[in-house]
Length: 550
Image 1 (tube, rainbow, N blue to C red):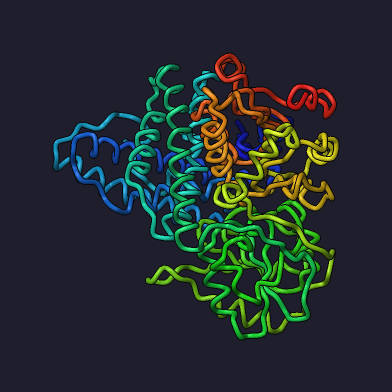
Image 2: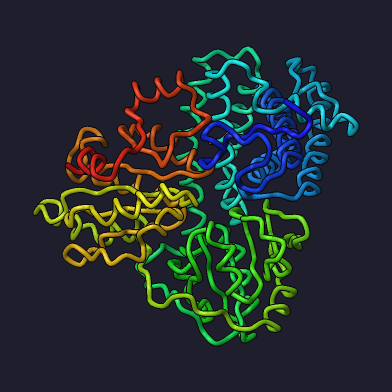
């Protein structure tokens, strides 16, 4: 690879379906990609030493949890474009690894002689080490595929864990597994069997981390409930909050109460409206806009400040009127945007954002009406009698899980067309931003049950696993695959990867993913997934309707 080249194939829109080599389709530069590769090498080193300490029965350092989750989360697609922020994490990771290695030395623990472990962290060697730690360091395509499938799953796991931990929920078993998995993929001699087992274990712990986040969200904010969300605007100036972090929107709502400033959700923050302890704030006016990829035009008309609590950032054009009124928090970052850190109490001070909002015009209305959501597992269970009766009577013939991500490609119009052409006795179960392809369509209901049941954010795909297992119990099915449920999942980034691995770990088969198959899944690994799980892609709407619905 030349000096200005990179290689990244972690998202669905990767160039030519193989990998971005000059600049990321996401907007990431080759230099930013280099520092992210360097950071991932440091994370693997930290995880390896942490695992060796714990395997020997020795205490590690508590900082490992926050470092691993934050570092992995910051390398998710569209999360952090700020080189300074990424390099600060590299510096912190090098220091942490040295501290862990000192503990290992004192305990007379022999560490493996792998590059991630032995690299000393010389700042003059950052660029060369970043190149050494890139994806293509693994020459065998199948071994590379399994290692990258694991690390991408870990990125999604890290995102969910960070949200849960910010709400006070922790699970050392999950962190211990993450370190073990990082150690496994650092081993240059790891076998296909070892790496495949690591992928499957990542899915198992993916279920655990989604359950942890579900517990955190519902424990603090209550169970999501059926809610109609306004998509119009009010007359007050507003703040638009995007991403996934519910603690941040709670902080913002508390601090804006009584100020004359309204709060609007964007993208994956839409489900905040479903939680009783968040929807109680009257100045949480509604949701503005659609999925993440439309933000360039929608942020222009919002007029007020925007807060990114996580991905999905689309780099603004140089002439964008909003580029000087965007803030980031947590693992997100962008050059020139102010980053708001949490205080010692874990909360954030949004006073600067609020002061700016008061100087701005109210949002320009781009649509009117309402959308309905809030169908996480507790709400679905509350309707269980109606749902079971509708299934038994034949009023509901089938459910299709259409969760996941939205994106820019025109091929994604497939999902809108698929939803429109579904027979009227089929219900869509959705979560994540994929829903923006069809959650504003007039698809009607079945005996009062809406034909689009939105559980919430991408992590709320957990609800459909819980619901499926409950239906299996109710109908006395021997296997989850005997239920009248089909899976047609749209993917874009790494949180969709951990959702897919979680579903596979639960034994779900014949999942279809699109609009394209992942570039990081080699032919050999795809063959294994097809043979063992029936994993497949999508074709045409007509053919897929026949296959999935009949």
